[in-house]
Image (cartoon, rainbow, N blue to C red; front, side, top):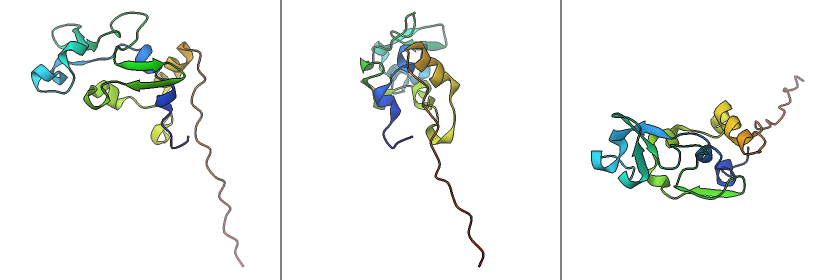
Length: 123
């Protein structure tokens, strides 16, 4: 994978999954997520507005999925968003990333091609 973050041309996860997390991450409870960006799911969890229904699309997602996207509240995003990684980020495959991309007609992210290392020659 290149040094460029593939999420900047994707955004599929933000327009596919319900983004739910503990209500304590909201600003009114001392967290970072703006209260007006969430809806209650139950007495313990909230979800990002737009991801609480199908078709899902987080209201914080700007741009066109598969072309150019960004999160309008990136610095204030929930732990769910912080923990979700693009497939092969850090060398780890993420089947959930692949599923979200497939739902939007996008190919999965390919694993990085590692350079072939030649064994040392013994003289």
